[in-house]
Amino acid sequence: MKKKPIAEPIISPEILEMAKKSVESEKPVPTGHCAVCGASTTTPSGRQAADDEILCWVCRRLKISAWRDSDQQISAQE
Image 1 (tube, rainbow, N blue to C red):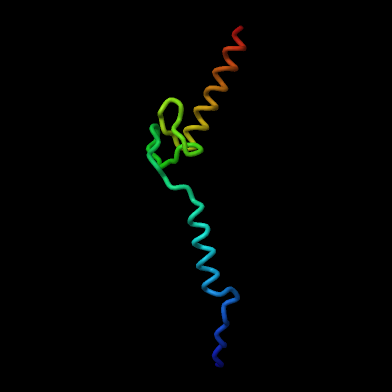
Image 2: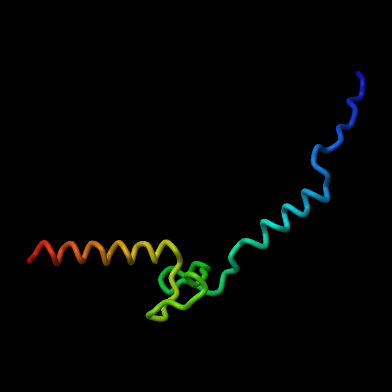
């Protein structure tokens, strides 16, 4: 059986390494833990929440949905 020739990489390792580094720098750095579930989280838009509670994106979305539901219930009762 013949040996297969070693194929040269299509993308040079230097370019591949630069691409990996550029993607890593764009990831947000976790700054704290969610007050509800304890997941690591960042503050929205680099600022502290108005009521000083830090929430992960899941808990934040659940809170917004709960506000929306309560507003709809109040308007339905009137």
